[in-house]
Length: 267
Image (cartoon, rainbow, N blue to C red):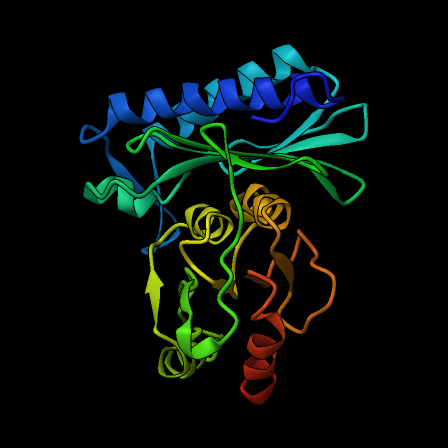
């Protein structure tokens, strides 16, 4: 873990504590939840999502009552300090509901568009990924660094499909097919938070997605950047967290990946 005397030590500690508490709830409820639909048949929620977010909110508000919270399940709690947490209590709900072990709790702290703290906790694997702006990224206290892959043909990529696959909407299939042919392959894990931490850890060389919310990706974006990678929107411009159509990579492949997207359709 980064040294504990930096200015965001309390925030990092609270986020880690909250994420692990949520993870305990998810493990305790695993296999015993009723699945409900939100916006459609691909957008699911469970009782565990709600209970985990309640636990996260309680920890964060007790530690920092002046900070706002933007959560996937309970919406927005306004703060007074100009800082806000982005909380996804259970990223990978479909995986969780089906009994797959790839799901996570994701928490990030933001101020004026700058990501300050990021935590992603994978409870089944007992892995906690942390990052602090300007101080690096870590997995269970061990420093992370992105891969050194510098040719797309040697890269393993990861992506996903949007919840809304209605006719006429961007569905990512064109990009998926093109990049699968140009690389060693494209994986689909079903959780943006884990996709991004695996880029930060050098497991994957790049990640892109067309349809995510800020709480899905905020912590992972900081982890990739602090591990030495690069994150932009899919045209190479500055990422807007509130419209996170993003490309994350080890940095060495970024321009080549952007070139692929320029050749194809982005929307």
